[in-house]
Image (tube, rainbow, N blue to C red; front, side, top):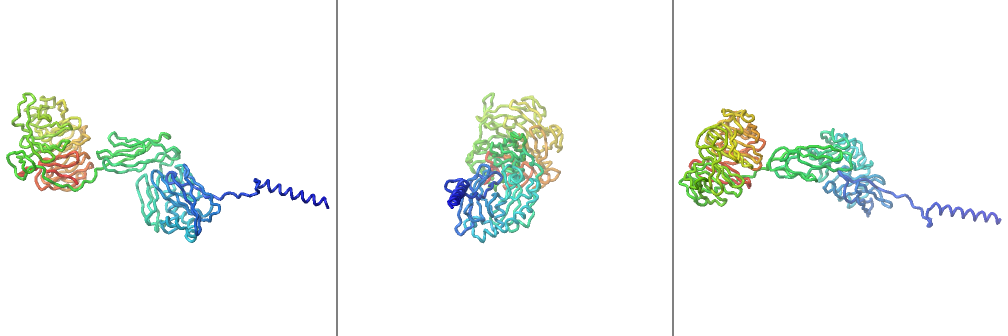
Length: 626
């Protein structure tokens, strides 16, 4: 009896010791394993922000967790009622996001643009903020029952875009996800999905193409972009956007993805020397001259790069307003004065300086008009004798960047300082077509003169049927033209012109050194590069008229004067009464009809146009763009 009691007490003691040892705690409490909901929040790159989770309950509890640098997050949902609604708030690639996802129970629940779309479709509305504020049991259970088939339908709709990345069967909510710029994550790098205001927009970010549909119609569509066959190998670089367009001096934010590499560093550059600038962060600033340029993104890790084109266009022109700066509708003996009290004789060539002062040729004399309309006649003196030049006999003028005037007088070219001192530069009283230096050179009949940023002068030599170049040292050469009458494009003397006609300002030059001339016998506008390459910009083909259009589809009736602005937009006085504009690509349109014959036009640094009238009128017009 005693032995059995002793053995019984011993057995109880052993059991107690085993229970204590199994509990791992002297308190004897058993801890069950944690119940978690975890995943990755990403939208092209890991989300930088916070994830929130709400349970299904009449008074729903909310928990929050910071997103780790790789986009991962985790919640202990012990004691909470499933299913759960998740919300991620933060930024990715500099863009703000609020994205939603759903967890039927414990396990993986990623948050990304596709999870947001799936929850919105299951909810029947993209107003997920209201659902999150009040996740009723009925709404949450409805989403739970419909979510899995909806994920499959979304995969079908986007199959053509998901397949190249091996992601056509990826469950974007419940499958393990890594933000490593491969697979489904690479899809998010290259495509954007946004859901708002009852609509869904899917954008191919690299190609800048979008498809828009209603949320209710999305699942019945097949959204197809051109599949990616490149950017699929580790180290490949994809620069976005591809084929972007921007106005002059505008900006574009470029980004890049380096496939499969943790280090996404890209070195940015602009291929063309005059193609604009780009910062280390990919912020591109377009140049002032329209054209097609290229941005290069190069990975220093993979040594692979991608070059994308950028089209830079001129900003749209606002409606012009025509006003009279000085002069009146009646010609007369020249009188200085302000505005309409000033009188002009017969106006010809004009030019505008950096301060907005307008200089005009008036019956061989130089007149100056200030921005307020004050007209004065300039006194010119001979650089050798110091004597006042009584009859300057000027026919065409241009201005350089420091205020020197270059003028055509007879068969010679003169340089006139801001003090009015006249210095001979090239040519003489003798007519001819000889290249040479200073007075050894000769000109036929000069009708138009311009100067580039380096001080080189270009003249339209009607007598020689050539475009001539004069250096600051007075060295004269032929830029283009064989001397024969014609309309052949080509390089240098292989080209031919038809420069017949008394046109005082039939030549212009842009900031890139390209020269433009009008030819009224051919009814066209020609362009000559600094290398002497001659092409027809617009008009020609033996047709005359005032038809707008591209290139040789357009026609001119009587192109008589030409100028070009800082954005390489060309302006032509056509038929005397109309100003036409030509874009850098050769698109011709009618800008304004001042209602009076024009003899010359010019632009200022702000893009305003100035024109001189002819016939019975003698006015200097200002054409401003509001």
